[in-house]
Length: 171
Image (cartoon, rainbow, N blue to C red; front, side, top):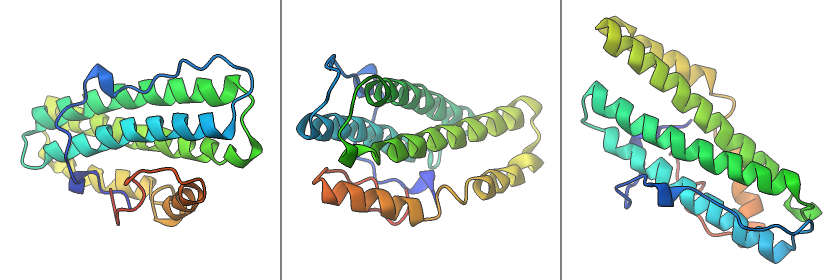
């Protein structure tokens, strides 16, 4: 189950430098280049996801600010990585990167739903809607139940791609 509130946080910002960008223009990407690009994408996402831990103990407005910044960076990262894997020929052994991208698009969806719910609570001062937050968690249970994370981690280990994202019990 995804738990964005309990991230370990060694990074305190989600600045523009946290956005993944690829300058690769080749039609065919080697396994070595895909490894480097995938590591860069995941490192940026790790910083973004880790920044969400700052929400703990913050008021609603501050939580929304953190989520909004994280959503923006994650969208940029996802769009750029999507362009990389869709506009180039990637090695067959790296097709699983499409699952990684889908996973982070789902993380974006979760953040977007969370942001809309918090915005509604904040604007209407209706704190009884906090119970809607658990509905969001239920909505994304299939995507973040540990199975997909284990599959992705297995792929990453196979390709010696370094990240801590999928090694945590929950993030």
